[in-house]
Length: 107
Image (tube, rainbow, N blue to C red; front, side, top):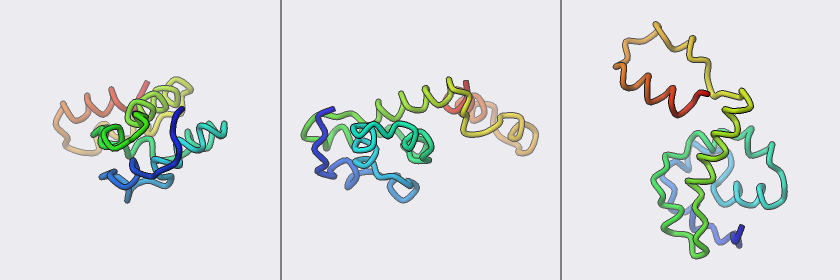
């Protein structure tokens, strides 16, 4: 990774208040090999994939794509964000909301 910790990605992130690890810290932990620490974070799920971080990054690091890859790794390790059976039937949600959520957050 080419990240030099300028913090531009964090300064423009609209989801920053929902993150426990800042976007630039995600890059730092990955570069330091602290992969599990990033996977345990809720920050990868808080990312809305708006690509603001990629637009602001002077080094061209696309953290939105990195977060999506981290989500997929977590899902493939059966570390899903939530159990779909806890959601179904509890709320009157439009079908498209459930379908989109299942695609994004489950294996």
